[in-house]
Amino acid sequence: MTLDTLRTDADRLWATLSETARFGATGRGGLARLALGPADGQVRDWLVAEATALGCTVQVDPIGNIFATRAGSDPGRAPVACGSHLDTQPTGGRFDGILGVLAGLEVLRTLARHDVATAAPITLINWTNEEGSRFAPGLIGSSVHLGLLDLETALALHDGDGATMGGCLAEIGYAGSAPLGPWDFDSYFELHIEQGPVLEAGGLTIGVVTGAQGMRWYDIAVKGAGGHAGTVPMALRHDAMVAAADLVGRIRTLATARNRPAVATVGRIEIPGASRNTIPASALLTLDVRHPEAETLDAIEAGLAEVASQVGEAHGVRVEFGRVSNSPPVAFDPTCVGAVRTAALRCGYRHADIVSGAGHDACAVAGFLPTGMIFVPCKDGVSHQEHEDMTREDAAAGADVLLHAVLARAGVAA
Image 1: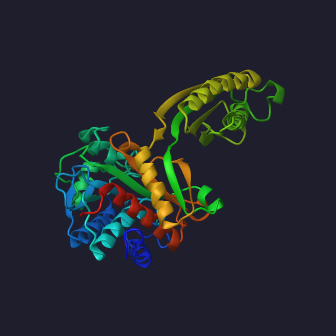
Image 2: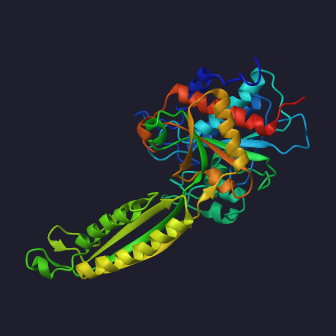
Image 3: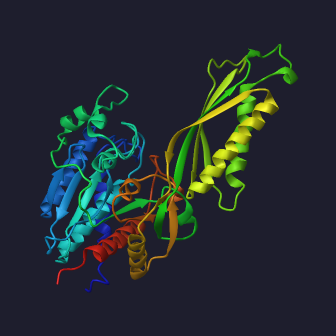
């Protein structure tokens, strides 16, 4: 076997995905492996044991990130890193996050099985609390490690029951002592299910991720006038709900009426004091807008101000909005993107460039070191659901591309 024909073990990877699905299993085919809960502690213990059995040196930092390093032949080389996260949504699936961790483990197993020594070390990473479903916000592990979020602030964060991150880390035994970073890595690669339908619809096996969309969140308040549902004529109403419905339709038009459409989602509408026989006096909405270009996000924000004014005038209400968060678009390193593309070609997988619509730890890491991502299809584009699914073949294809992208950066020992 030559390096060009080296492949991961599809059966072993699939069996490992099935084996680890017992940690936090819901009984309905999904997972509830919330960050730093008992099931997260169990799957972490399992990962550490497997990495140690492969001869890796395992370190844990104070926010619980796990770093398992396979030595290289050149001690002066910075490690090539890969990984993702083990935590899930409360009713999550079996592949989101963990695929990237287990594919990284499979890379290490494959190199060991075929006695391939790399020049640079290879580090497998499990990032803490990527999802943000138990402790908000998401990406806490990578953000603390990179210095984007203060450690003490993160440790003091609490879940809905009042448990703190610091207390939960200590409880499961992952309040580590390794220094915080950013560490001196050569590069970072992350394999992930797409969490959308584009690859599957296009009959593609690999998405070569060139970057991630920028994202802006807004809070919107529509302020009208309440009244009795039976006594105020329609023409004399200042109905906040009707205005909100009009606003939602106009936001959709605002997002799609451009050469490269954005995605805009009104994810929540609240009617304070709602009653079936009362005209709504106010409505509160949340808006999520995403696009790969900051200029387009600026244009949509300006358009939102115009739309708010138009809706207010049309319905006799006031529409106020404010931006509550701004995540700029991310461009991944061209050399890492190229390594992923070359790996897909070498392995013979149908592929195309794609922009991530979701945030990942790789998006945070990209601001500090060369970063690349690999997407593989998930059935019907479904993720963050218990029926999230993918094929054995696509999982293996992603692991193969990860293997060759990592080898391209790490090099093979002479």
